Length: 251
Image (cartoon, rainbow, N blue to C red; front, side):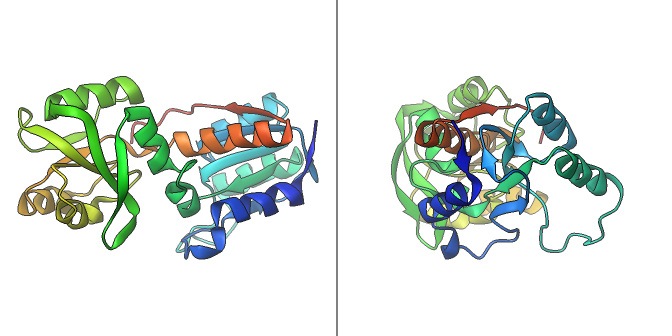
């Protein structure tokens, strides 16, 4: 079966409420390819290896969380960027990207999907930080036990843990990707531990000052699951083929 590209994009924009977000990159179609779509490859980032794999799989579209045309990027189409665009155009492949809308969606979003993977209850969003979430672990655990479960579930060892590894925790806040700035909101929500993807140097001090355990579990590792979920949704909704392709990143 195939789906009209325009219909798929229109439905997805409505589903993810894309118009509600002021994002740093365009959401939806970034590079135009075939007008109808039969096969979609999804991945976290629109890297050259992902495009190469999509070509091999004869994909009509690539769905990613991290696409192109970020605010502040060099607008010149040169070097590796030109090569990637040329590959997409030559093979008539659509590049479709959703960033903040795919972090935030209540079911398909990265934050909702991480909670589902980890079996965390999801109570709501941290006050003043709508992209973040807070809830509870299945049962009280030591920090080191949570890190072990994260490593097992994400197939990736957390980069950084700030806090006592033997501290007992239960209330958890999280935001996938690079969201160290939300540490204060996580603490104010009553969380014992805050889980994000990656942090910067100053976030170590921020976590100590706000007396909250901080875990950086991996930007790539925490943001696989939104594109997986949306790709599966497309496959079911439109009876098209979908395959997630893992292009490992240590970050």
